[in-house]
Length: 121
Image (tube, rainbow, N blue to C red; front, top):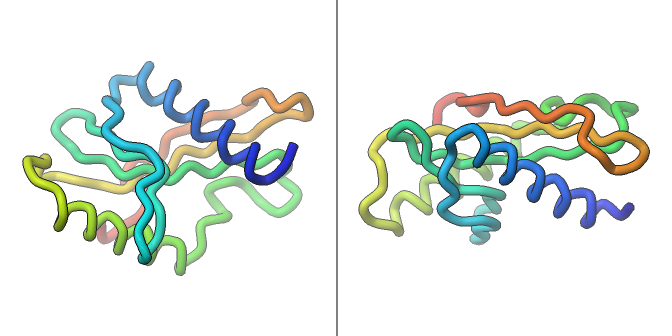
């Protein structure tokens, strides 16, 4: 399984997991110069920007531990750009992280949503 295919699988698993928990998907893979947002959704009156982190091994830490300060900065910038360029959005917003750990067969052994994972959003 390549890094790219792992990421694609993770985003598919995250979308399904989130939908089951009441999130409504708005957009996927929003890309701009400042960065990329994997999933944009709404839930309970919030606009939710979602970073999906998928790992096949915990050798180098957990999915949530792989988010660097630079990545957080890019997520904030991309979220702000999205809000500046789109209309009729909920006024409340946050950045969540979906953490996925896969087993050797490529199946999810852990999926967790961390709400408001990136502070100062």
